[in-house]
Image 1: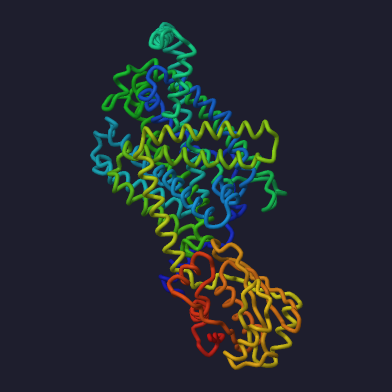
Image 2 (image 1 turned 60 degrees about the vertical axis):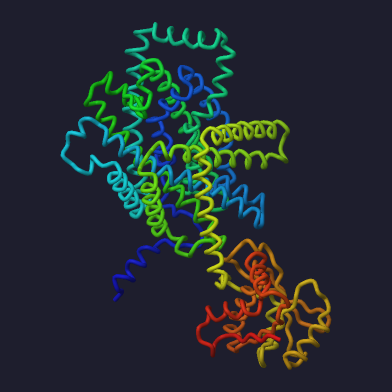
Length: 636
């Protein structure tokens, strides 16, 4: 009988696996998965028109046109390319990692993960806080005698806890709820905007004429000057670009063709492109129409802080033209989709972050399971909400910064993949990269709080990642050892006696001198010696690797050769494998290093070699607690 603690542990770690592929039973149609990423993307309609007007004034519709053009002809092509090259949800970060190998690539990935974490975590907390704000400020809800609905902080934390509970149940429940919320919200929004266009703007054409005359008068009757200023102002509307990286991150949930394979999921890639373009077109239409309706129909003073349209421009139109009850229904639907926008962010975190930190040795093994991550992210969301006092405005700059930096990294990655393609393709993606860099730079200059908050996330990730790497440095890491035919013959020939392996630095060919030193230092016979050489591959990688050992006879000497991210871990894994294979305790002979031991420990942590003897012995001690069964390490 399992204890309660064991049952909880099994439940938490259920689904823990080496590769982060999603089972076909968890996958769904592309349009339904679009709703999961769309709750984040489409929910920004609740505040985007108001932000656009405060940033651009009566120029807002034209600045929105520029944003829509960038979305359809900039973001969509970039993420088409990202989807094609990261069909398992790795996103642009994985593309850049492959272009920057080693520790430089790892550090770059950690920085990007800091911005991605800023984007996703702030999406969760900001959306929940905004949902709570809508409910707390609604006049009908204020009349209800429910204490929870009158306290923004408590309601926000409750919404976050509920979201975490849904993800503990599984993805399909989240997708099902997202479909209902998205289509209900979009349907209500469409009713409001169509009502504004057909029954108010079309019947009062003078409003449009007056707006256009005011626009030209404000810019000296110059159409080109007006367009140019709109191009300069559109970065302030950049929150309308959110959702693309999440759309790629949830790719593993998209159902492909029956004949798709893990290495060539052509159907999944094609369906994800449908997801991206459909979401972009829907959002573009709503952004354009909402910008026109709100700019022309709502008095400018109502957009200001404390005004009735502050942060809820479309909801203002609903109350103004369709009545209080319809407006209240729309407020509730807006609050629900804002709250559930955290679902797409949670899905992005669950699909993205575990692909990197555990593989880098910068997170504990439980980070490979889904449920512990859900609990961890929910607790982090609680902390961020508490720190920012559930304030939407205070979190807005960090959100925009995270979104734009991640999108800029996608543009850079897409451009780098075109270097061997046609000149037209290179120039097109280079231009897009410049546009996204400009947008990001303008946002950072005008909203410096965003980069400060993102830097905090990067610092936390760096500290926790390298602390975890140090704490896990003496793990065995290697899961499987394979010997080729020649290596097997060496071991079989030596297994009748004592198996003695002498570590030898790769590149040195003076085996006779090393053999003579070993005879003198360790008092062993030269005929018993089998040299073992470990070549460092990429020391920045961590584990889950297979150690392939080849045998080679050099003169009269037998040499085992292998490649690994760290010398001590490879030696320990090989010794344990030989013990199990021969049923005898093997002996490993090493030399002491000359110099400061702290320096050599740092060399091991960074470059995979250094203080080999004591680290190898410690790895063996952890892997085999019984001293009588543990391979022997000799140092001279």
